[in-house]
Image 1 (tube, rainbow, N blue to C red):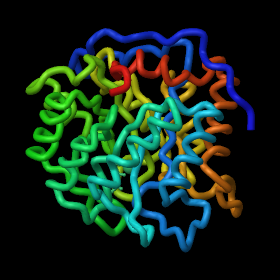
Image 2 (image 1 turned 120 degrees about the vertical axis):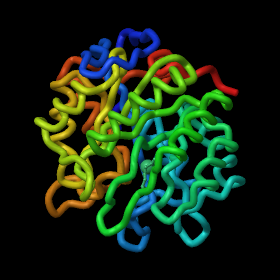
Image 3 (image 1 turned 60 degrees about the vertical axis):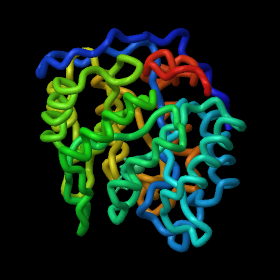
Length: 302
Ligand code: KMH
Ligand code: ZN
């Protein structure tokens, strides 16, 4: 595995405004790579390379940092490898990732579709650097990923109280309208900068293709930065579209368990390595974690 040369410098952004239709912030010289190594949907029995124990997660995190990741989006599993939001485990996970890596630790507040709102709000009690915050309900295969407005508002208010930097997860164009409403009602996030992730290709959400990506980006708040991730077979088209449109990248086994047709992912690091190589080709090499902290407005370690 290669250690990637990080970008020469990361742009720090002004506080984001909320004007719809204005251009999102142009990229700096580097690419922020987020790894989402586990998710809540795949089963360990079907995907043996999925990191589900704390040791597996920390090992993956170290490999992914060496490969060019700066942020880790974390879902955890219990002793039976099932998704959990157990607070003690989440706290231990944050501590272990901080101990072993420099990655920005972003806990999922989405959890699994079966998780309740109280447990999802309580994720912030584990003291992460950052968290995901999905801006609307979406059909999710045969399930529903539920994010009604009162929950979104409560979660956002709590991120501001706790000093946690939210990443706004946008699964559909309507979620962008809700993001504008949220920023208009409650103001800028902790850290002052708006960063979004377009989650594309979920069955029930927006499709993972270049035309939709361009449309979504044009609707983001002025000054926002954004990454994109394509679920399943939309992974590569979304990577190429995001790089060409000036965005950042999220990759990982939460989103994709096939590296190529008929070839399962061997580990998260190879997905990060591929994203980093493509970012290098685009002449926007991976940002180091310290550069990513400056970009996203994430404070120093607690
Ligand atoms: N597992 C999905 C139901 C997030 O992490 O915030 C929700 C999800 C989004 O993965
Ligand atoms: Zn997630």
